[in-house]
Length: 355
Image 1 (tube, rainbow, N blue to C red):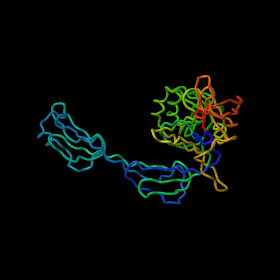
Image 2 (cartoon, one colour):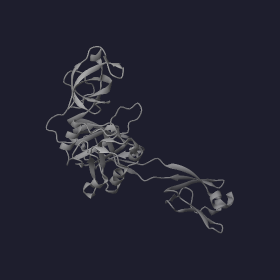
Image 3 (cartoon, rainbow, N blue to C red):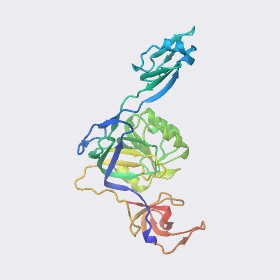
Image 4 (cartoon, rainbow, N blue to C red):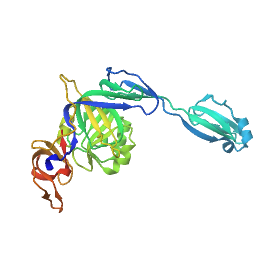
């Protein structure tokens, strides 16, 4: 039955309780305890990356025999060395040397080759959002509970960050120009409508900004966006679709507040959408976002396909049976009152619920 159809849900909520999990990407130490209050900038764990191992062919690099390579080794096995330090040499008229490719140590020497263990410096994991530590396995993950305005998007570049939210376009369809990104936006999360110029993304590095939230982005900018050091979150998709009005209204209203970006890169078999959280004070218990919403009159929905891509409205009623569309497709549908458009029939598979 149509009534049993479970639609895709996108959360656009002025207030919600969310859980953010932080996982260690290697052996490390947790620096916070359960029920401890944290801020976005707080370090909650320190991770020691796993060492990488390389074979360095000393004999070939120095142009000598295996026996001479062993004689020209200038460091003790097992001793720590710094990146660029000479490991062996000099040899020959050209005074050739072999230097350490990174901080680490030489583990062994055999047949003119050394096994080198490269060691990376520990890196910190930040909370990324103000809240309270709700749980931890004591070794590799921490769960933080936070309260605030929650907005889910369509695409992210796999980065995480936080900063003060700034609306530079003052319109949900405004294009981001490189000249708009100046030193006044240093450390900010920039809100705009459409991004179609790679120079704008590059300018974000020069400032630097802490994040970018846009309605849509030109598809040819995807490779560029994936290499940006700051998070980029797209709310609608690729092309020139303006940001949907509920999302823009909620974000622009909170301009000037700190925003936390989880610009998750969607992977196969994963359902976690990229999210923006604007932390807000809570005067009472705030519910978590609903995971299941039944289609019924009054539910807010958003169109996902042309000719009304991105349009938002209210579901009037579910249509019995199937509807025939100009494309020739027969589909289960609903009558929806779209803002600034009017009543239209939309296939259930071409809409999502805003909850």
